[in-house]
Length: 535
Image (cartoon, rainbow, N blue to C red; front, top):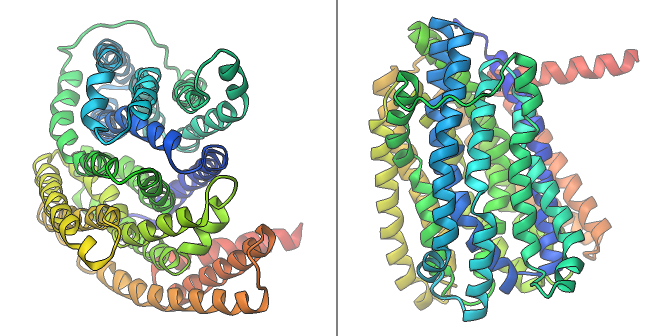
């Protein structure tokens, strides 16, 4: 191979560590939210309100903007030097301030109309709260778009940790908002649930702010440069339009799910959101981390025209995705109820909410691998300058989602199954549809990955993951007999032992099966153990 796969893992590893910290704080945020507000009136209103700016963030900021900005910035820096790259960064930030500032104002003014359509099933009181939350969150998109540009610059220079850690500021601000703001809001005669929106908005601003020192250390200084016709800005805009469509599948799915779930009473919106949060943990740790690290590498390969190196780096990312995502799927399926019970069943979050969230988690987990690999596939297409296939894949996924929704909404109630579960299951079907189309297209665009062990590693990890999942289920059941009861300490002990055993089975099994990335991980763990013994 022409490239060294462990280099990809080291880059992804720094992202994963930072992302792990952020996602753990995200789970803590959900726990605090569930404890104080349960799963119903307030949380449903907040999630509906937050989905509007969050959707646009994923489409325009962390999705399309990142995929378009990083290859363009990398190419200009490679060919024209750093000063030209800094000029592009200043100009794209200036354009974002104007365009997204106007869009934020439109969201603020149009919040009532948006919510009357989007959350039509809400009661008048719940709808009013959602409207007020939407207005508070309206500048969120602008803040995270600037944060996305900062992340792209830092990643291009090989700085991954701080940008990946930046979302943690959102979770910290949200947690502090829920704890500290309700008394002040109540004293002012305002709904205490507004603390959720205020905390999230402050966190969005902090996501950009924590990256500013890193930009300054690299030599970047922002000043107003209004040049919307700059070739680099035009190229980013040209890439973003199809990229937005290419990223749209998941976001349209969320919109459809929220619109339908708002008709099923209090709870389903929150259950679906918490279940997908748990799916996002491995996606963020492995899929997004590998995708970000791979994007920086394949962008360089594309800029220099080195297709062989590009295929090697892509193969390493796909093998690593199989190593991490498939066991995560098996673990979440086998341990879904114990995980949800330990994390969320406290305060106002009851056993019925645990069952609803765990059932949704099962349906979402079916698509986890496809989600994770798509995070690698889509940016690779944009690094190669191809925006057509991601649009085709995304559009097909939306069509599959809508068709599956129509089928499940009609079929599941007759089978005695809660219809909201069809929303999660159809999302997984959409993920696999997108993945399949992109896989075929990427083979044609980048060339076959024959001889790089991708198929072998994926099939090996699928079989191993099935074994690991059965082992985890049996071990947890046995521990429940030995340690009956579901208090936090015993539940955490049983789950911790089971997860550790599952991780050991996966790592040892993958090493024996000859997955290259597992060999690298074992070697690094051995080196760390040796250093500790010397210390």
